[in-house]
Length: 259
Length: 268
Image (cartoon, rainbow over all chains, first blue to last red; front, side):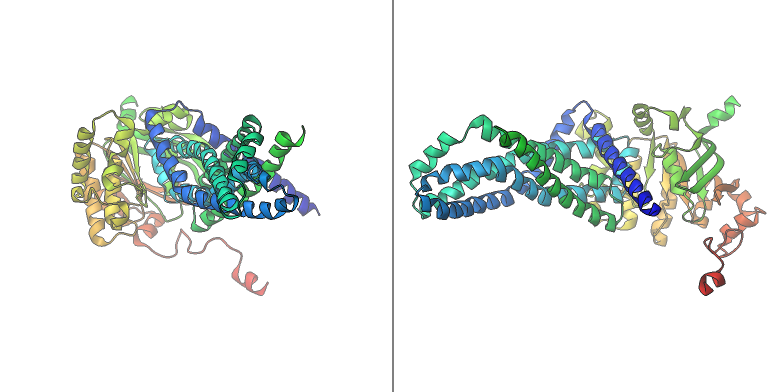
């Protein structure tokens, strides 16, 4: 019994210490005057985490839009409301699926890669050798990757939603014969810029912050062995996915729950 | 005394350091003379690398002080510490080359980070550094294409890129074939003389390092168990030092990691 209490206390302290280290890492990385050189590094990283994630984002967006149109049509047509297919697809994508699915895909595609890369740099003493060359790895390695994730993910989420809406059009209008005019015009009339689009972007920025932070910290804090890195990579995907789902509920409640 | 101070680039005073409950160093003193090669030897796992990390300021001692070029490393603010690190460099055991850029870019890395030299000047400097370690022809190779010995030489070129005052070698001979080892021994000596460096070589390869070291410290059991010039060490009367030099399996440094009595453990 006493042992259990000791264990709980021990784990609690460890968790708090981990949060502390994660916070210190972020402060150390971001509290610095930006340098031209670092802007270039950030752009390079945007290419790695953003542009190279485009394929999976576009394909997923397309299929999710198509499936939603198919599912939505079979239900809506019963009520003769298939004209509302456009807003249904657009609202679900912009409010929910765009930010959330992008964040989950991003955690799997780019987050795990960030963790593994930084973890390996640690294990092979590259981070140490940067320090000894008087280059702060927090600013040289961590900061550009963090900014890149923060910038790339909201853009990816918007692309996801846009492609999804086109996918919905492909199935709903071109295949199932919903009127193209009503697909677009009812969508345009229903979707509000500040309520739907902006809230979706805000969600996406929050997810980007959390997922990138977890990914980078897990790599930076990894135990520098092959086992430690594989563990850290797994944790990145699991923790960021769970955090995104949890935060999504909170954000949705705040944004759309209480009118 | 003031003259003495000037002779030493690094002074380690009453250093105590422990990791968790394990004491690594217990109140040790070292002096690294300027312009010389100092060897720090000792059995594996004794924390020789830790000593280099302490000098580099990556770790903080529990007590005691480390003076590098007149500055107390453990007490330096972060910014000054990074400034001071430009004057020292370290050759890691693995080489620690950046794997995503070529050998040329690796050597140029510190120059690009810390100087405002033009690319053509940097290219000249890099080629000179690579020539010094015999790898000018390998400039465009990626680190993964180098053999272990070449990787260490490339890392050495990178370590001397900024013309540091102090260079710390962490097990430079570990896992090298006899030819690479001979090359590295020759390089360490030649570079030390040519660039007016001060070198600290941490190693357990006794014969190689005794040939080139001006001064030797032997660490074991959290203490310095012997020091002196290479000759003095060879003829040391300390049984500990002799065990280490001869490579005897058992002696004052025990073969067995501390454990319970074997019969007790087996019978239970």
